[in-house]
Length: 102
Image (cartoon, rainbow, N blue to C red; front, side, top):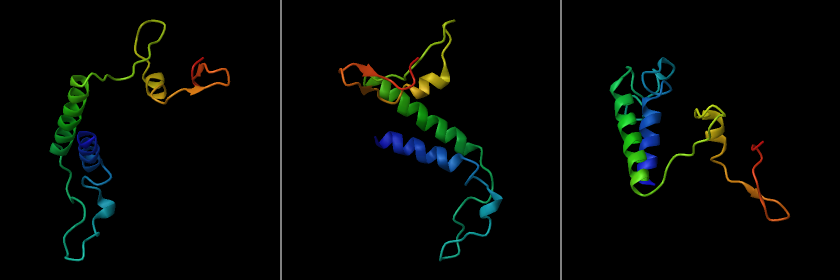
């Protein structure tokens, strides 16, 4: 869980929202220090990528894997792979029903 939080926070820190965003140029703390980086730093993306790779490798080592849904031609369907991460609900008869499954 801690690796996931760390990976997500580093991804946020690398994002254009706070990594050199000129919209926040005047935002300072009470002590006068800038709240966000004033210059873009591409090294933040590398650090975020490394943290996310570490998270995925730790999940694999624990026996977990990414959800993958495939198209008819055998290629991975990124949209359905994301959607199928959400759990299916049970119907009144007790069978598994997924709202996005065709």
